[in-house]
Image (spheres, rainbow, N blue to C red):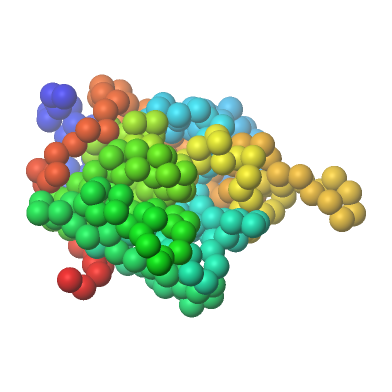
Length: 319
């Protein structure tokens, strides 16, 4: 895809003030995103927060369709979140507590050697709470997570069942790209839940969740999508919506239908909580549409190394 650099700079006000290299942390927003956020804040100041949200309801609904187009999924499979960590954590905690299938002593979580610190801590916390073992999939000669090693670890004699495969697609340092789609094929073949952290992927390269084969995917808005901070989303494959329940549920994702009974939303929005920032969510929708307007192709195929290194916060398992 050819990028019109002159157009990109003209539509990014910050380039007139700074040479910015930290897009992997939080990118400079384009003018349409800035306009969407500030316009809604001005409306809140004029008529009130709840009233402004009601006024923007149609555009808020449109954000789900925009994210669905970005991920090549259905809007029913999209939940918005305050950030990628919240989305990832909602999925992980729901899997940990899945009735009859949650983590137990002897169960295993398989993850990559180059894994994000914010994911490692919940793994270790789950291990402390439930006895689930956290095991590292070896890397191959390129540094990628080894698909062959993963295959060998599943059903390893004397080991407990693998209850989750969870990796980061693109770690935050060095430009490594893990073979997420190949891992997805292994997970699907063995019927193992697959949670993919795509925080550094979405907006930097095309994403197709069907091609990737993930059951859950989390991502942020603030990086390569150039949305405001405080935005993110979670993808939940439809097949899981009949069997998974958020660890934390409120009257946004559920409804009281009796004094001692509740129901859940039928879609991924059961993972959302009531209070949210309408202005930045509108900004996220505009940012996604803006990214798509540049002509992204939907293909999850990628080299083992992305041409640019990214990010500054990384935690890896020791060799």
